[in-house]
Image (cartoon, rainbow, N blue to C red; front, side, top):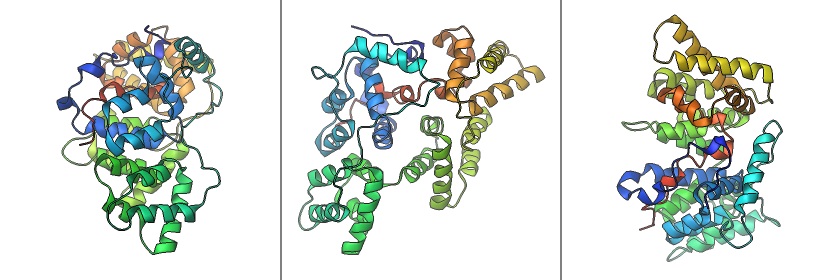
Amino acid sequence: MHVTIGNSLSYWIPASSINNCTHSKLLNIPYNTLIRIMVARSEIDMLDIREIFRTKYEKSLHHMIESDTSGDYKKALLKLCGGDDDAAGEFFPEAAQVAYQMWELSAVAKLELKGTISPAANFNADGDAKVLRKAMKGFGTDEDAIIEVVTQRSNDQRQDIIKAYKSHYGRDLMADLKSEISGPLAKVILGLMMPPAFYDAKQLKKAMEGAGTDESALIEILATRNNQEIQAINAAYKEAYHKSLEDALSSDTSGHFKRILVSLALGNRNEGGEDFTKAHADAQVSKDTCKLSDVSGDDSTSLETRFLSILCTQSCPQLRRGRKATGMCCNDYILQLKEMYVIFLPPIFPTKSMYTLDWSSQFSGLKEQ
């Protein structure tokens, strides 16, 4: 049975592309995207992402990981994913449809996002440090012990483990982990051990390195973090790379794309609720921008500037309300905004929806070698 749960989801990549996507298309970008999202969101809203993933693709995220990855990498991802929504009693599409519609209606309220990783009860940093040291000491490495500790602790607890490890053994836990594990498992474990802001800063840096730019990674991070998280990322980026994030974005991107990324990197988005009157005014700007998108001149430039300002500064509930006020379905709205605006749309949709946009291409050819 196919379930459609609202206009916000109707532009997703068709589920059939899961099976059609070949390994040659994936290279490293999807592989890194999967790891980045699992690492960054497991403690925040992985349960929400699982719900939308299952509804859209009619297969659970757990099932996809289990089928299309392998080895210790698979074990780590399954720990972060949590339960299997395909299991009996775990998931009901009809109920999910209603729940999602209620979620959209409550967008003005402050919602409690749900992660799969929470602080471990009876946490003992010293004990965990000893377990990790034993797992890496001597001949061979006990990957299972490392996975069990790292994936079942909150990020704050992992930072305590790092301190306890150095206190007990005079060694750098991150350095020891790097020397003992490799491949995709290392990317997951080392990513989990980093403070979130520094992890995001590293992912942004990687997205701008080399000959090309991973625009999807830049959009994914900057369009889905709140103001406090953006400010923390700016501080982390400056500390780690001795260059401001704004300068890095300015030197690696251009045009409208640069303008919106720089604006988003300020972390100055309105985080309030909805203003119905303003939503209708914003909707008119959006419609006018669509009409003039193929026309050059002062009027077109002025409208584009106003439109980009709306996208960068209005709250996510306000943007969604503005989209609804246009009277257009989601697909028509995007088509009329043309390709240059599609990349700026993630804030218009529920945050948890953003993370499933490209996931249909994440699960082919990802088995650990």
